[in-house]
Image (cartoon, rainbow, N blue to C red; front, side, top):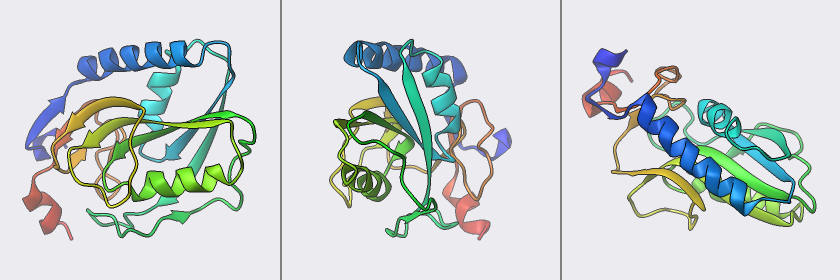
Length: 181
């Protein structure tokens, strides 16, 4: 699998050092308040596990399963929620965790859905944010790394359900993406 990558963007030690910094900031920002973390499945699992172990606060964890890529390399723009009911976030401080902020469709739809439950606050934390114009206006309050508009895999990010288990983040060549479909 590593041989498929064009190059590695962030190795494991670099990722973990950045998680230490993000966790420290979240811990300061939410000191004295109980936090509800909503992890977006499946891409954020590794990020979520490593980040939350670094946050010494009382917190509640829930997950949302959504789909917007539908097996493609680019989002369809349609976000499908796979749960019958959203997590209970009324009067809670909510932190949404996702692997990557790309078009903004997924995170905007999640934020809008959670806002209907009247939480006290909602913030967004992403491991990666692409430097690009977004289809939906959404920004991350906490950001691991900003990257160019490239297709990346590893550390939870996938292409066609492959590469999630790589301990680093790398760029998948365009030829590999187009040839596998």
